[in-house]
Length: 96
Image 1 (tube, rainbow, N blue to C red):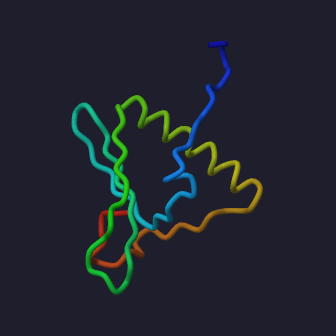
Image 2 (cartoon, rainbow, N blue to C red):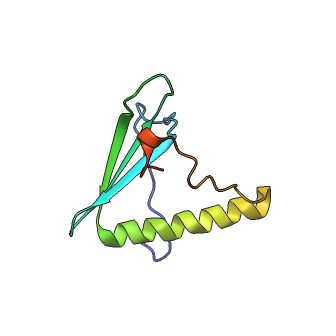
């Protein structure tokens, strides 16, 4: 593959439209980072985790860098994203 050329991507039809996530939980072992995505509803005391992504520490750090870059690009075009730290309800504490 040519240097700096992205490989083609194929998105499975079942996941093509995506899912809305209003929470994410991150945990780790010495070897992996686990990122759970889900949806919390006010009337439901349990959160529905619909995706778990497991990545190496190196990939987790690369993901962090790419996410930070994209947030900067977003904010330069649309303005600052408000921070809601500490606003989560008690049953969801420790989860973003």
